[in-house]
Image (tube, rainbow, N blue to C red; front, side):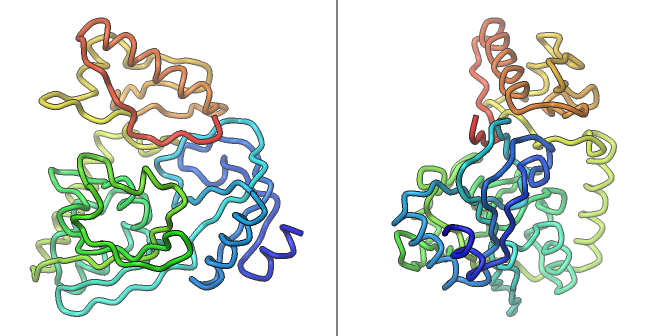
Length: 295
């Protein structure tokens, strides 16, 4: 019944796993996976799942997600088909499924600045808003004007001041059944060549300082106020420390990388160990930045 319904409203598969769908390449099998064709299909899918008490999870590019090894007996919904955007002067409309690095390039080509910080973040626009992602002292809260949201079967526009943005946080984290559909961003007229140079220079810096050649979920911990998580992790001697198939990167110790057969359970156990050691030595509580699911 579930398969037949989902197949009518999106691209459906029953053979996906979180290992395929996350950048850290971890996680169990998924009973049902669907990419809705449009907003109306998404609304019908969500209404059907709620009416039949079927659990579901929305994902973007899986770049900030840690999943357990057990099979998820529910539905994973991806908004990959929500990939349209419009650039009208300095006001930008972009749908949730657009990959951030790609869209940064489009904004730069259009002569707009303000989004360069996201050039190296391997997530979708929806995912970046959900996490209030940022880099280089900039974050999504700086450029979001309003967000189009599927909320309790109603499509609403939520203004920036309603979203409770703060460091690596938005209101959406309290409401996993709300869907970010699209956003209006406020960018500024800029110089395309200057913006392109900024993006390229930062990409080079990332290649030199981060383990982008290994599967990871990006930064494991938020930086505590006035300090850096990687310094605290180095301070407890955990650079290169390993648990199962997960290792504290020798290149950047706030990245926990999958060495090949890593599991979400390994990741979380190592993260907890780091938190306890840092708390014991520095009396600082590190907060995980990555989201955990089905663990």
